[in-house]
Image 1 (cartoon, rainbow, N blue to C red):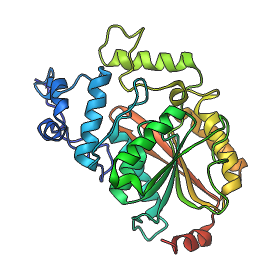
Image 2 (cartoon, rainbow, N blue to C red; image 1 turned 90 degrees about the vertical axis):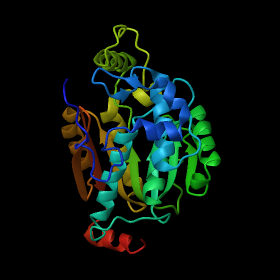
Image 3 (tube, rainbow, N blue to C red; image 1 turned 60 degrees about the vertical axis):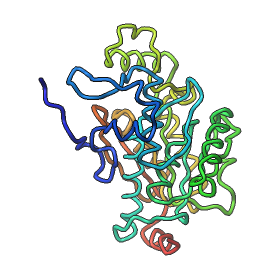
Image 4 (tube, rainbow, N blue to C red; image 1 turned 180 degrees about the vertical axis):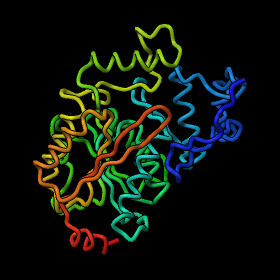
Length: 315
């Protein structure tokens, strides 16, 4: 029998999900998970990752066990993100803030983070607040996603006074209508829709389901769900991040670091060119590995070294 890895070494060193899932502990926290757990071909306890309900229930158990979230749910068909990868992004951005703060990660509510595309799941604010105590503003263009995220915040007392959810009324604007005139953010995070069309999103979903061993991959049931605004946008992630970059110029003194995930490595050159045209003072990129997937984090700031030092004084 093939030996399974006991630790996910590719995940960030502070990621709580580096160890394999201990289903007995997860089930003790979330008993409903037990009906989805069985032995896999290696003789280990696991779930069917092609089953959307199993994936959602696993997420619920992980958020309850690791992040002390009492209630979490999403509407049917909405994106159910893999928790380890979401946690990784936040740990890497914590390192980004530490890099201008004598390698000390700033913690507490005074650190304010803007999550572009918070989704119905509200996962980034949950993990970021529970891990580092940061306060969050989450935005989305989908009204049902906004209502669901607000409900998650309201029901969980730990989040209630630290996470705010705002509707973005425009389908094309990102920071306008959201960042108030006198408001500052230490960090912007974004997981943009990376497909450029519905057809491309469907092809990607078919690939994913086929890789999970589902023979009916031509008509996939998405194990992680996703509405079209979560999965694709005209022009794909390059167009979306391009809008972020151009609009970020208007808020260059109100935000310390802008960041975004980049799914496709072939898009990095285009993004780098857009950052140069925007005349950012500094940009950085890094790789994040979760399972077999490599994602890039791009970060940029309009603040020079002295301005960054002055910014950090508020922490």
